[in-house]
Length: 226
Length: 403
Image (tube, rainbow over all chains, first blue to last red; front, side, top):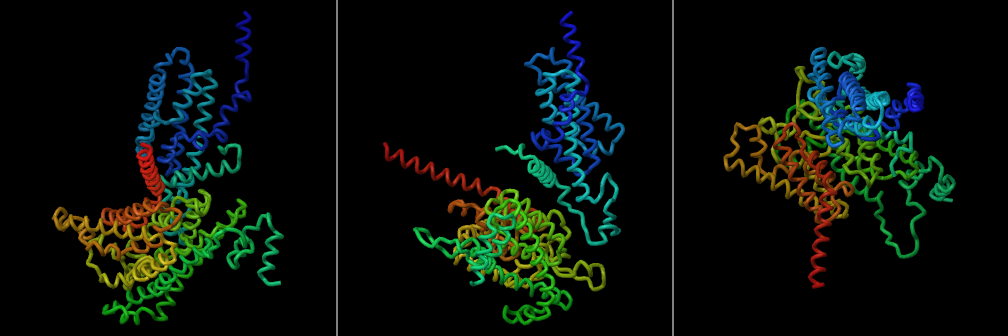
């Protein structure tokens, strides 16, 4: 009886206790997967030329990571540790196929644009990293929050980078011509402004991520490694 | 009390204050500071960093003046037709005219002013924020930049590129002396990839060509590399290219004046003759390889590489920005190789790749820019292997002695 009471007491920890909230908010800033842990850089460089693609990618990773974390967490006591990587891969692969097919069915143009990078979510270091570091040792609810939090941190950077790259590179946001029409020379273009073609190339994505890291670390000195 | 002493007193008074670096920069730019060593066993040379930088600027002034006249001259011949080229001195009467200078100066001087204003403003801001002295590095970069851009480049683009080059190319690495890439070339590469329609093609090299395009008065001015890449007949002789009566970036057209600059730099021991010489050899070797391929008949006239490959090998030195780049930018003591043997390899590969990129990728006509940036990245690797080879050699000698 005592055991049951103890378990009940444990379960009564509120769903959004301070600790659980921390699981979600930490990865947004001070433990951001991209800017602090420098994971998931490949896709951050490859698909951020447009804001829309960034948002879809962020959502896709959020779905895969949150669901995957829950599944791994539920199975954590029955996975033999020697083959855990294979099991994790099977779980991610299944989830990624779900995302890929959904995109192909409902947003074909976008899925063409994201091309291999949806499939490559499997290799995204953030996902395997969270499985290994968190889901294997924590319960499903916490793992879910952790997955949402880390994916949100990843998505936040993707969206910031995508915002600047699309705005400066194409002069649009989500496809809307916010700076005017470059061919008919309206808005800013009437003054002689031109789109910065370099922003559409991957090196500029790297530099944009670098600038974000720079700003973040100069605001929070505790993040600077000695 | 002289002005100099007064300034020195102000400096002492504001020591440690926030804006002190900005004041010191102007002070030491005008006067030798009072803090130099006066006694003891120190080497006292007059050639501090500032004087070195000034010498490089001095070496570029002939190119700048030529560039101003040339900017006007290109407009004149575009409108009135090209006078027949007889000899250098006969041709100067068409070249050194007041009209040419006026047209050119109006276009070129704003480039110089914007380059310096934006670059130095950023240097001052960084110095004040970080609390170190303003470094002299930008003095040369600020002069190089207007010389390596097309004359019609919009000034705001130049300002954006300078801001990018100084902040991302230099300040994030720790300022002058710490940058891995040549800042001037970083700025040019940024412009080249960001605004390609203003940095390449046949409409940007002569002032006004973009505005008159499509009208009855339309004219264009292609660079010689552009003509070769499109397999057009060359409109200029190689002698005209050598003296610099051709369209191109502001300051790089005249190989003759680049040679004058190179002489000043080598004589004052600022630029490394090893880099320049081995760079020239590297370009010649690559040119010879291409010529050999042509004489063997491996590449036939139908190929898109034919025109550039069949160009006599030595002409690669004269056309395009090769001479300017290898003299003023490959020799950058910060981003280039440091060891003497390393300099030879570094220079050789700069020249080698410059001609290779030129020929194989006509979309990037200015091979020297990309070649130098590439070798900037590899310079520390080259130095590493040179040092390791030396260590290995000495270890071997040690073993022989010990045995």
